[in-house]
Image (cartoon, rainbow, N blue to C red; front, side, top):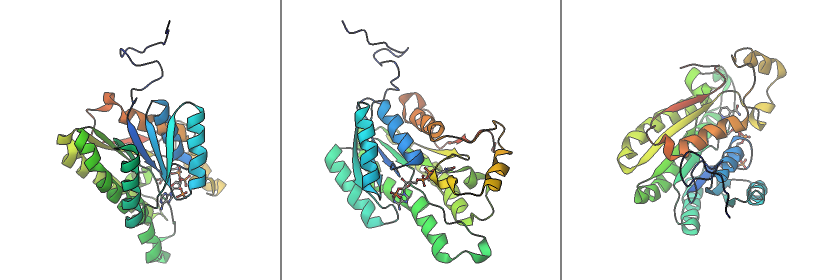
Amino acid sequence: MNEQKTTNNPGIPAGDQGLNGRIALVTGASQGIGRACAIELAKSGATIALAARTVAKLEAVAAEIAAAGGHARSYALDVSSEESIKACAKTILADLGKVEILVNNAGITKDGLTLRMKLADFDDVLRTNLTGAFLLTQAIISSMMKGRWGRVINITSVVGEAGAAGQANYAASKAGLIGLTKSLAREFASRGITVNAVAPGFIQTAMTEELPEAHKAAILAQIPLARYGSDADIAAAVAFLATDAAGYITGHTLDVNGGMYMG
Ligand code: NAP
């Protein structure tokens, strides 16, 4: 006899957040926050298209998901290239039929004080973090419109809300993502598509690893919960926003920052 446990939602197995049969695309899924989001969405039953520039790393994440009983495929994508975005979106839609959940997570930093910042470093960060999210959403969202259900989740940052010295390019890109999120939320609400942002605080990943210890200690002192965040903290928020239970939330920026900024 099948003794599968259920949650309060009839028919949904315990531990399952109800994404069975859904198809999700996560950018920057080769490591850090993107990898954690992909794994969490797969645990909830979604099939995952993993995208980033380094396919070998994506294959390792796909293997990890498969070993846990989930489904994932890897796709080479450079979000700073319109050509790459269009080609990748086309391949994923041909392979998987649709994308219902899009997590725009791929991001870079090129820090420097404004007086010394090269235009190329400003442009690169904007193109990757903001224009990339816009173009990929544009390439994917008609697939969600067809099904009259969709979730776009943009990974912004506490820096987009509070600003940070030495990160004018990064802060502008992440603040831009919040404006993009609200505008898309208004445009696509009538199609059953919600668009939200998650704003991580200081999360321990490769991106933050290289910061000087003194700088990290100064940040820690500003976090009421007195610990750095983990990629799992962000993945849990993303997985929640992807569920039907979050269906009345749109245009929102969800802070996951241990209280370091309360907007
Ligand atoms: P990470 O460890 O550096 O990972 C970045 C990911 O983005 C990698 O998978 C990378 O893969 C991918 N990527 C970078 N450029 C790309 C491009 N042009 N096209 C496609 N993929 C690209 O960073 P993370 O800490 O996990 O950060 C993930 C997101 O969270 C970023 O948007 C970041 O701004 C945001 N965030 C992070 C923190 C934090 O404290 N860590 C805080 C707030 C917000 P490839 O190099 O293989 O392409």
